[in-house]
Image 1 (cartoon, rainbow, N blue to C red):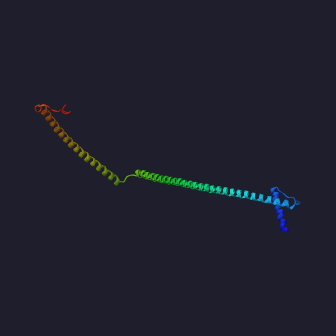
Image 2: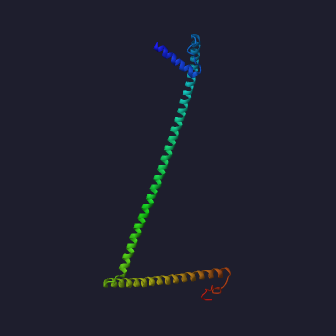
Image 3: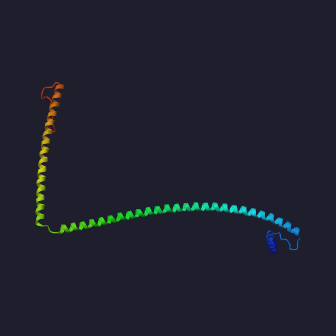
Length: 195
């Protein structure tokens, strides 16, 4: 009895939810019709619930796949940005290393220049002065020998060139005299010095 009473109260609540409330004083025929209408309404509502559940699941699947696709895209883009920033940072570090090396080289160069200035300011020793004199004499002797040899070569070249010019002049004179049937010595080519 308790179970049937519980069943009746749940049917009453379901009918009340659907808007078809049977009064407790109604007959059994009205309760049977109401239960049949309740069953059909429940079937319809089950179909609607199933359809909406399928739609919700399908929408969730589409939304989930879109979410994961967008998340993968965002991860790949962030990875690319991280790699680019790493390459930029490595370039910055390379530039910084090169600048540091350049600064160190400049400092060493300045130190060497200061040492050279200090060495030039120191007085020369006797051996260094005699060594410099010997070097100067050697360079002077070498220069005089070189100029003497070069002047001798120039004079020899000039003599050879004069001889060639005289040979060429005599050949041209002979050819002109033979072509125009002139006597020997009648045609002569004058040089600039002779003019």
